[in-house]
Image 1 (cartoon, rainbow, N blue to C red):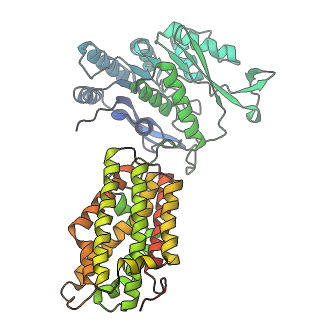
Image 2 (cartoon, rainbow, N blue to C red):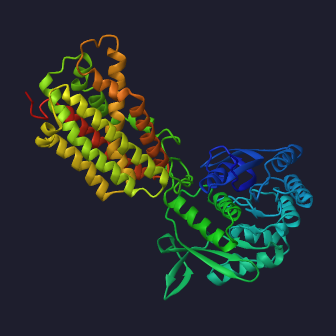
Image 3 (cartoon, rainbow, N blue to C red):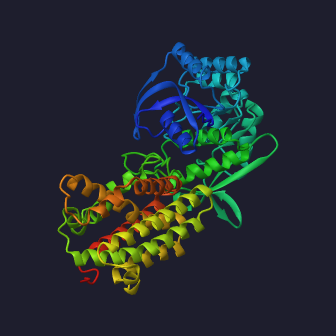
Length: 525
């Protein structure tokens, strides 16, 4: 089956520490469900403390990377970051223009988000003057959005012969700087990042904060020549801001590729990065990276692999071992189980199966799709056949249906059956399926174990028919149907919900152990 997802081509430098550059870009794009391709403009030897060396990609090889990506997978949006040199700028501009003019379907090199990486956090200029001028001449005027911070916006305007430009000291100055970038440099829109000019709220207005304690608000200004939008965010009191510019531009590119119009794409991206800072990773000596995956819920199993994962969990293995290798079952396998204990078990098991059928009928009621309804109905029909066989089996031990129904439920039977019914009444269909799963899965697993271990030495074992019933094709098919039903639903759940479901499974398994415990049911003579 073919799957199409939005594609973003990232043209930027590599950060060996993983917090910025293409490494940050890829994480941000993944977090938005977008496919990332990368063209590496430079390799850097850097960490959160600084950059110790840069190896610029040869222009001819850079061009080959761009051709390789656009001639095959194509892209919906291009995100440009660190360009490193004037030659790099020229090659990127020429190649993107070449692909734009080709107008090939799927290679949309005309939608560009440009993060003009020019000045480091410490204030050092990262891009040489000729490269800045090349950027202004060849690229900025063709981009859909440019995302400078305040020092970068001032530098670009000065390199563009706007010598009287000064850094803003108030909100009006921030707005004007965004308008100046738009008017003088020619992008279709500008997002001026206002982190260098934090504000406080005073008398209902935003005024520039005087010190760290006063910093309350950051304003990012979006201007497209018509509308000016002020995106206000709470000032993040965190030193973990490594890679925020890269991540923001890539998030915008991702949201544009996903189909959001520019204003919404920008707002969503600002919120994404803001939360990334709030939930940042604090494990470095310098300013650490943001948490790119704060909005990503990662499941610890692959699709179709939940039950295997479940039974292999440490908190499940112990109770599962006690249940499926219970001495009661083992004594059925070797034929040494006292007959009175088995007869009482047969009685209580029949009474429980009635409730087991009720709960599966309830599962069908709680289902909304015919596949799930049919699956639950098939299990109910299997239980009906199982109960008929059960009665025939009981006759061999001198128990009639009347004898069975004349008995009270044991406390173990009542506790277990009412637990699953309570789960069914108070929670959703999947929770109900999880409460039933230990019975469905466990009997099949226990019976397979006993059948494998004792099949060559079961002559004279009165309990062998019980084992054969649960290794039979029809029961194993019921196990498969029930397992598939759980697998199809659980993959759609959040990690926290999965933990809740596993707790239900563990509790039900504990009740299964109690159901088989010697002394759980009064002995029948």
